[in-house]
Picture (cartoon, rainbow, N blue to C red):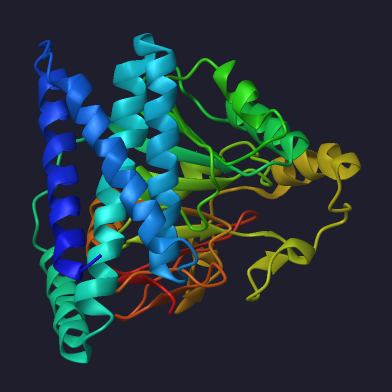
Length: 353
């Protein structure tokens, strides 16, 4: 299929999902939606066939196309889930698939376009310094991403609910089952939160959540993390301490992290050591800005980032992932808090090439 034909199909897909989203937002009914879903599925089938065997970003296009079909099939089986599946899966998957395809076709293939987008990113990031503070429905959106390892996921979830205050409505939880086949999806379905994203096929370094978060800050919370008391409170204090801060990353036991972001601890990095870990955290996790630290390279096993930057990064093609490293392209400021360390970064955070 020619590139312009593919571009046209993607244009139609984006127009279709935005139309349906508008219908849902207005609380209307539209008999054309069923036909639109059929058309979207056929487009996804064409994209799957076109990019089967592709590598790089086009492999992600292929995987999103497969997940779009799976989500459409699921809502056909249970129409009562239409709003949830469409808003949290189909629309975000289509938008992210379109973004990645254009990144590959229009930017990465052309050195001049790449430089122009790099410059645009710098200018946009700099403009955020003068941008007015926006209002958000939530203060924080926590993204809990899981791919199998259900025993880890359960421990992560239990620690989140034990040490995160969801009662005042300032924090939302979004779970993403990224292609698990070990009961993770069923476990997430039993949790009390409302935003639940399911992918049938695993997508490495998924970024579709940028279209559904509603918090001022986005926390990426891996399913192999155990939260401790005050974990989020201290990260928020750091983020709010300086308007130039874009991102913060906490420390953990030195055996569980690289990049000199860990600290020596007296407990083993095992499930059997969790009780001792919690006691150690309670004794040492006291807010201490004197221990905050500037970094130009981060390992974001857990990170909190400004949503405006998260969305900007997702929409500008200079951001992609390799080995989960995060580097900075402007002068950095950083954070490490006493007991639990974290790093803060300026207004240009780029996931390393």
